Length: 295
Ligand code: NDP
Image (cartoon, rainbow, N blue to C red; front, side, top):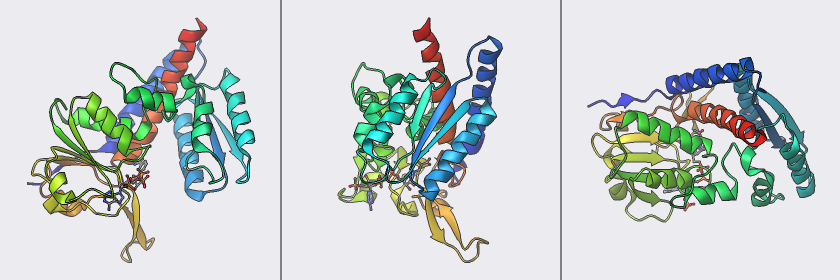
């Protein structure tokens, strides 16, 4: 059996096209275009690339972006003051603080400063808390986990009762994915660095989401035949045959696992493109929330 490839790039493109259409309808109706403020502290090259890509995607969708850069030694007060200013700015509907922040800054305090209505990354402690509570709805769902769920919902008729295993329990991927799967009525097991007999646990999964940051860790023998495998990992490995001398791989041994899984996301071209698509969708949602409050 060869797994079906889940084409995240194509799914993301369809979401981006839909957002673009909805944005142009808003503007044609005389409403403000959605606006996204990005806050980048320091000069982490990867973060600079991520922020640039997000701004480019905004421009393509007709979303205005407002880039703010602070030096690596910016104080907690400086960062929080900027966010307070953006909270008040009526042209800004969503605020994204690019993580990780430099070590001297208190990340939780910074995220807590973002207005709940503008928390398009969904990392505000209240939004995450609501995700964990029955009967409560977060205003925004974190983008990568939302992208994972979108792909799973496209792939499976229902998640109800399926055995889902999430590899990783980080605040930005593993834990919110697990909470979303629970909300979708899956039976969820969360694995981490202290999990015993990991391959045996993973083998129970009808749905496997890997977010560990370990290149090609999940092997063919770990995967239940027919399972749906979502690989969130992005790892760079040396590859002398590649023009750059290296290439990107996921947390799953794609070539091997593809032989047993029912469906699998490739890396690159799987979860990665979904994250930006979900950010655009969340920013549009933030603008709609703003309209509702203003009326
Ligand atoms: P973190 O490093 O924050 O978390 C990794 C998690 O994996 C932790 O919970 C850790 O356990 C667990 N883990 C680490 N090693 C093992 C192991 N050997 N066995 C079992 N569990 C292990 O990573 P992130 O969640 O931020 O990111 C995970 C991956 O996803 C990375 O490759 C990252 O680049 C990628 N990513 C991709 C995105 C996208 O858009 N596609 C967006 C964000 C991240 P413990 O808690 O015990 O330490």
